[in-house]
Length: 127
Image (cartoon, rainbow, N blue to C red; front, side, top):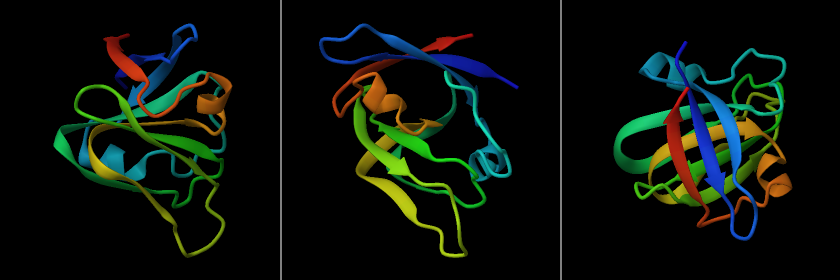
């Protein structure tokens, strides 16, 4: 499993890092955090795409709540969605209302706790 470190640079706050598993192929991107029961505090999943486009995510069979962070081509946070754990057969979808090249999923509340907001800059580093 490949991992990267995502650094977030919130306004007027110190940078914060998140260690992310890379969803590097279509199967990993489709599965995401399905069937997992929890996620360590400073870990997440990174979804890189070849080009910017409208990205839609869902919470099918995810047993814990997430922040879904949509990131534009210029490495800025475009939208943050607080997604609740999946609890029924109707799976709510989350999207950024614009083109995104990357998506990061992490524990719900991570962005609020670290003051990450729309426009925050990120960097992607090898682990």
